[in-house]
Length: 163
Image (cartoon, rainbow, N blue to C red; front, top):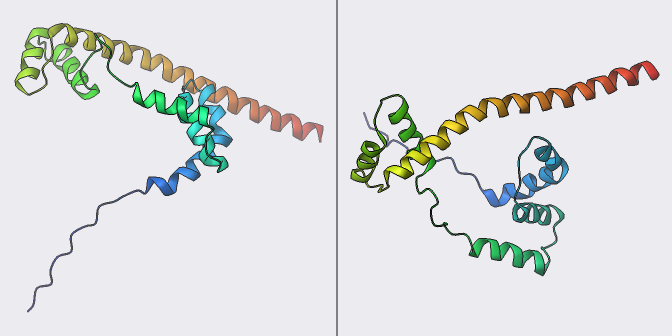
């Protein structure tokens, strides 16, 4: 009996360069919905997607704006330095496990993510606010969606009675 070599599973990859024209086309057609749902699209991303959809390159002014935005991306003094995952871990440790901010800061520093207890406290407050306002924002988004769907259904019903 001969053993056949096992084939390694191939990783799932996505060619973003091939998908961008399709994404850009849908963005140009339906991008206005993002604004109605409260999502803010940076002007640089909007310019890039619209230029991909139309097939014409961005103007020199638009290219300069995108270039300036990319070059000037840097942290601001006093800006929180934790990742979202570490911040959520800190929130969990503080609220569910009862650890203090100094203890959490010491633990993160030992694990290779140095930070102060004030940074931990700031991020715990931010995560708390996100969790509180996330529920309200979700309800508002659902309400907007249902409102738009209701307007469409009402228009169809009125259209049937008129025609």
